[in-house]
Length: 239
Image 1: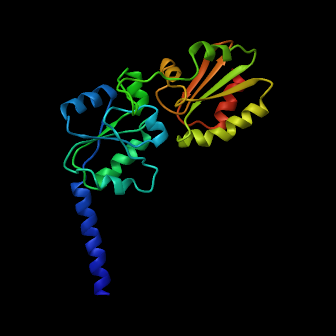
Image 2 (image 1 turned 180 degrees about the vertical axis):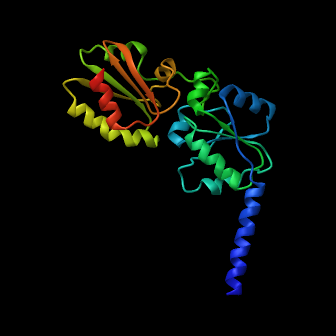
Image 3 (image 1 turned 90 degrees about the vertical axis):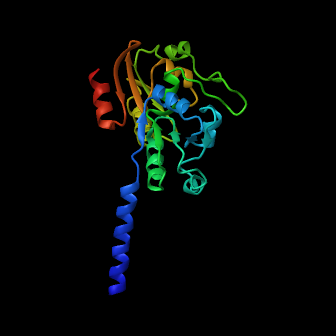
């Protein structure tokens, strides 16, 4: 009984000490993030997106460490805990989780890119691929092509998403339902922002998910973040 009490007490003490020395990650907007990296040229830059996202464009000198992989912490152990670490993803959700993990591991100075690469691109900051040092041309839908999709007598519901985005995944089934259940009144278009970076930037889509409803080519309603099917259907019926 005394031994059990000892281990419980030890666990409480260790947990208290871990919380005592853990640092709070600092959230920075794109311009401040870029400026801070210039101030700390010997820092570590971590891209926590998937390898596929990384190769399509990333911040120069960044190292790809997918937060969704099972070996993120094993790779993080190889980093220098006494050097500043800059962390980012596409929209900021995965990097926020990653910075909390790094904080719990004892990293001393942690910076998170608020809004991720979407805000970085919106600020016209440079990115690179493995073979280039300037921002690559973004393939995908042009604005003219996008506008042509709005040429409909029906309401047009546009869903901007990414495959990794959990709220987007939750909304996908009911988007498909709406497409079938309201086909006489609504056209549903889903656009992958990773495959259409230039378009997303031009439309100022800087978070996910984002919904637009158009009526007669004019924007009638928009929503940023998760929203229920009931809310979307109600909007479609009242517009």
